[in-house]
Image 1 (spheres, one colour):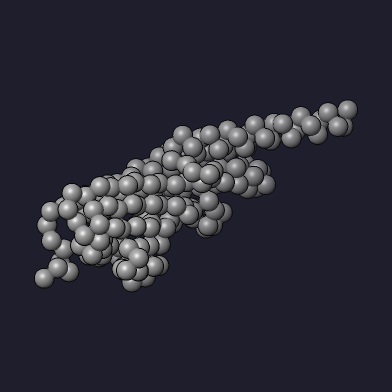
Image 2 (cartoon, rainbow, N blue to C red):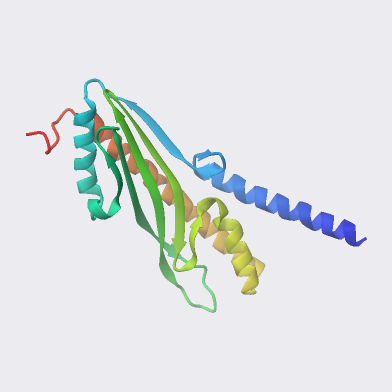
Length: 199
């Protein structure tokens, strides 16, 4: 009987974790079980050096400090990589009549591979820091980790469900922001105007 109960518990746990994974994979593009954005861009006429200069100009406009965000800069190889974050406001479910609003930071690495007339943008290594709650947790594991943490804090099932719904909505907004970042860089790479570095 004990073996049956343990087996049932393992099956239910596996189904719960699979449901967590399917929610995340419905929101974010995935590769090998991790959040992974990739876009390959064909550019009519643009040398690797011109595209490099356009990315650098775009980064100056889109990062508070390009120097702090820059992780790799290899002009010869045609690789630029940035580690940065953006903030989404998060309203926790109301508890004891109190409304708490905080900030979730979404960290990611953006790699831009360049060659003549072509670029590839990759965003991966996505982590979320939710108000110092489960800091630096991958999005793929965030829902299951938060469920465990809330259960440990003896939060009721209704509260856990409300938290999950709000977290999923926050993920949807984050997905839109990642897509907008890629679209913005794509537009900059395809623009016909010269970079500020070309003079």
